[in-house]
Length: 408
Ligand SMILES: *Cc1c(COP(=O)(O)O)cnc(C)c1O
Image (cartoon, rainbow, N blue to C red; front, side):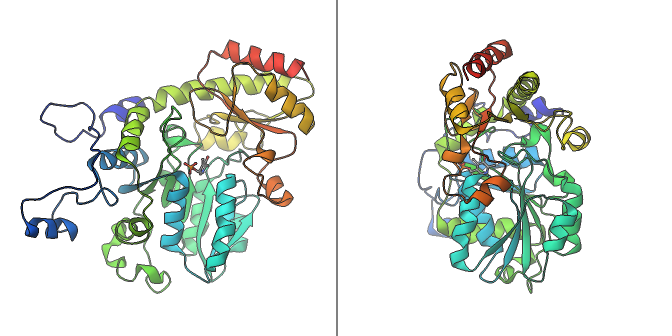
């Protein structure tokens, strides 16, 4: 099956007595059984079924299966938000005294989380370029994982996962890839050596900006050595399913960052048009980036432009597609604000992956807690505007940005 067909037909909804074409919203907290014995079996994973929606729910399960299939993983765990997904994965793998290597071109909230984790004895070592060499140089005996965004938001640095994962595996550590901005429409990180894929499914997977959610997909490729990963002591025996079992049984389950059935349903609806939306968003982003490249006094950053340092990698591994985000530099903070305020269609909002075009000034918002160094490493300058390109007609979008740019 090709991409758009697979979005609709890879997994089937649970059989439903009315023949529902989507798994319905099972908006319940608990599931009742005929006997204490049967509930005991379900509770102890000796029979299939659901007991309590924090741990599992049919609508959430349908969403997990769809994303797992789309990414080519062996299973997935859905979370209340992208941040909940990242937190659950990190706390399942890392403990006090451990280090993780992190690509610095990173979403602001994730940078803040790594700062929070210092209090628990977990150290993040940031690298401003994510290459086999820069990662390899930072690995030591305390390193337990490498975390990178596949296309950094908003730095828009594309990462060669094949070579980075190779150096991870040579050192016996997993590669965790946040593929929120790339989406499986552009690249399937597990096929390029990543072991675990994370999405803020609040973004492109949902597509309509109507539900916060996140998801962890496990490729099942990493073998957890229980001497090195002490938390896997009682899970290593599950082989490829060790991480998924651990998530379901401890940190994810007990921190309680589960996804609501209703939000899972909204995502199941949204994901069906992922291919159509991404095709349009990527094409719009390319045309808008080309417009800005011709425009005097504004600098543009988009990884699929031939002027980008990531152009070749994008052609080689990302099917030539640069995603739906572009950043521009307006020359000063004042000019950036004026440009933003003069837009007619684009909304001033802190989100990406909506069908509407959204703009934000990252330095004064998402990165307001970051140091100057963190901002520069993340590609955020005082005059940077991030544009999350939507599905509007491109002529209208270009016209809107042209008149706003002319006003400065
Ligand atoms: C938005 C985002 C997150 C956080 O996701 P939430 O759903 O907002 O918690 C993580 N990573 C990236 C790349 C994001 O864009």
